[in-house]
Image (cartoon, rainbow, N blue to C red; front, side, top):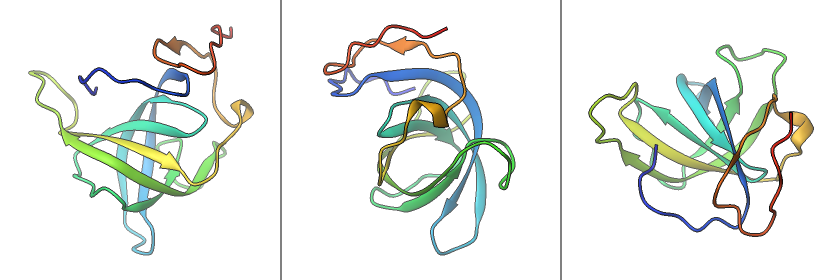
Length: 125
């Protein structure tokens, strides 16, 4: 995951889940893995280097068309090569949704990641 120290305005939740990304307009799907999320965005890792500003659709499962939430019109904010010794994927990326989502749209359980500045939510079980 991203190693830089960050100052986040929104609390993030740890949750690991396979996802499918589609670059908008191309119809090309590729596998990735979500490691955390907030109401405004997610952190994913994949083997594909994504350009900042790229618009993507996201399916929160390993198959497009599943019953898990689909997030349309999200935007890649940053993408960095992962230089850790043992990693599953080569790149980590922060993706921001064009419209915030609600907690009901995501799987549970939640685990709060320290760093949320505005919304000190406790873990939900």
